[in-house]
Image (cartoon, rainbow, N blue to C red; front, top):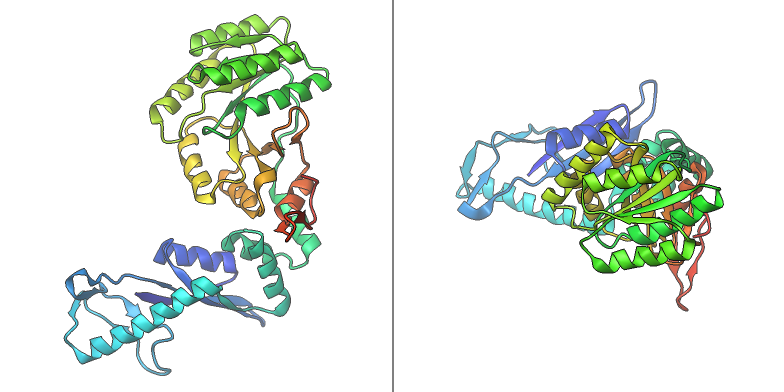
Length: 380
């Protein structure tokens, strides 16, 4: 295990130093904000390098200068491989084991921060809403007041304004994110805006989805082309060019790790960019009720495509919304809309930056009667 103290001008800078030197597995043990003529912050972090498989502590010249060292004593430097036979090493290992147990307890119960009361309260407020620690400290460097925090989050966000003119919007995303239902909602919204809408289905993999979009097209009286490759897609767009100013394209839902599918879709989009009557946009659908790690993993695959905006679906099935902010900061793509249920055409919203910030800070709690209660946000 390596324990080290980091000093920087801000918490976000200190956490960057922690990640750079100790890696993503590092655990923050404590933080302290130092005021004065030259204000700074101090972060103590640790990372576990112990490998007990061969009865050795592999420290590779690491220096332990953390709280296990007595005040005034020199930091302990360990050689590359030290046998456990030395009494001093055995004593050190006992202290390390105790410290590891303490860190695990800190993980379970939450870290203790030496922060002013107002910052501690704001930290807890944001943590409860699922916002990542590094983003919390970034916000707290600017303000601790809830309304100002909401305003700051809104300034970080960017919204993709609807609607389209001479544009084709392709929806992509993993299976189960609600692409076909979202296509129908967007089509209805575009019709209300006076747009002349055409639908294309690039989903010949699931017959059921084709029938679903055919039903939506029939109900709304919209023309529909079902295509299987890039050439047919270009032909469909050319066919729509004289009479339609907005085209919505549904795509196959596959697992994000299907690299062959993503490469094929990338080639299709490259061909559309080179020629065609419509400007092509691509929205990636993300289920808001998914695990955040799964969302980030999906992005790592879909980022090879020219994604122009994000659509968060199934917001109504989510109880904490801070991860939407986390993902936005990771993806750095504007949000086009959110969906809040399966009802077509009603369950779709085009929030402003401040409305989306309100949603991110919303806290939904399950009451004893099963009713979701309280939180300041747009009505979802």
